[in-house]
Length: 231
Image 1 (tube, rainbow, N blue to C red):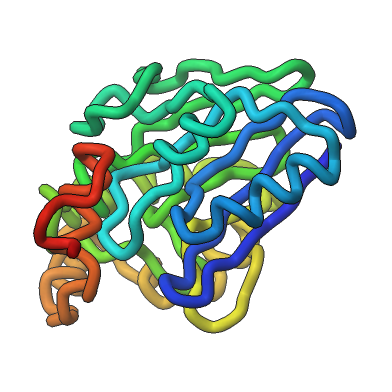
Image 2 (cartoon, one colour):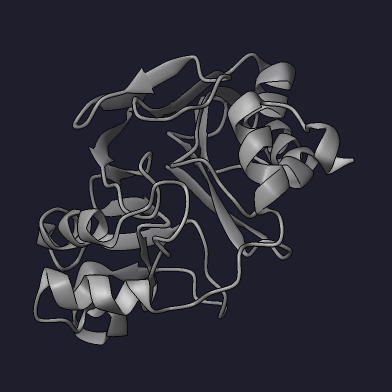
């Protein structure tokens, strides 16, 4: 299997390339627009045919490469059914399968960071978007985010996976590339709470600045184009 992790230094975004092997079909998760040429270069190098692209949610800190990859490869754009995106070809429901050849992912509706956040489980690993980060969790104060929803997504779904399940998030700001469910249970300070109310209080008092790109990225990712305010 081909599994490659890309990193965008500006937004600290992780993008993932999956394929059964050289010369086969490929899938990309959470692409960044400015890195499109790099993805295309690797697809060519490995003789891969990009057939599906997934965004885990509407990103607020970068413009997705989904539309540009579709333009160049005619791949199918996929998001969860709660997504407001106007450029998605396939909207998956909770617990729905996404397949390319020998690779199968299962969608998990994990709202809280946004109301359209989905995670994608593949055998021994889960792509958690911004729901579960390494030693952190995604903020819940915009895009209809909700700390109670996120608590349920974390404690009643993601953290019930086997402890040796690898965690691959959409972001990391300290150079960490992967974790496990067990490591997060033991070490993640956001998960050291005794109740949903305690978690909500923690998240509601973070007082974080808005992402610098939010006013541009959110409408661009919904509409699939860079709007006037982006110029």
